[in-house]
Length: 287
Image (cartoon, rainbow, N blue to C red):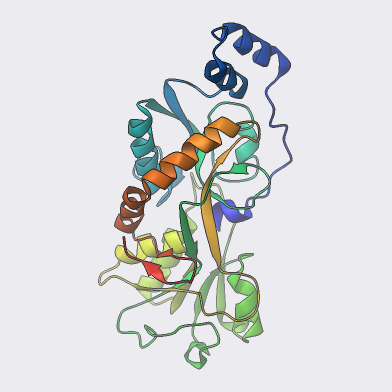
């Protein structure tokens, strides 16, 4: 969900010639590093982040999301200040933020998306089920479990689990929720988790970070089941990277170094927010 399935127009990722020339003129002659940074147009004193202003647990304009916390951590490591360009995570997000050089990094983006250049992945997670504690569904492992027959299932329309839900004959029990919304006004995960708490649905199917975050807020906490045992249909697990412009090779390498050297600290932030982190063998990473 979210960044994985954002539909956007293709964009020109290279800086405008006039801006490029202006920055090249300002570089210190004979300094290769300064010249490279000027070409890439990365702010030398401020970590400029592209983010959604209302998309917890990822980010919001109150700086309460885990991507906000990761950005703060990176800014401190870089000895930079931090600023945000806010735009809803919907069609046009990359074009209106990173593409217009209003910011320099998207903190969370699915690996392989062609709209951005991906850094190395800094976590891996999967679509997940959320069920109530005591529901009798806590040990369900996959969507083919017969106990899901007849259960009311909350599903965000157009997301990968829908294929497996249909293949297992569960679509008749699905309560659909919209995928593409303006998060400033509509927050689908909160709607779905309220319906789970109220008994309107028996199972919520959500992107892993969202499932983990909102499950922690239930009383008692909901049970999160990553969908890592599906044997057919689309993949449920994805690697998440940071997104930069295609032209920003040195910047990507700098971020890769930060990720590599600070993975434990990044994992701690993710764990605090309930994100179900998985290794390459689909085993949970607790720290």
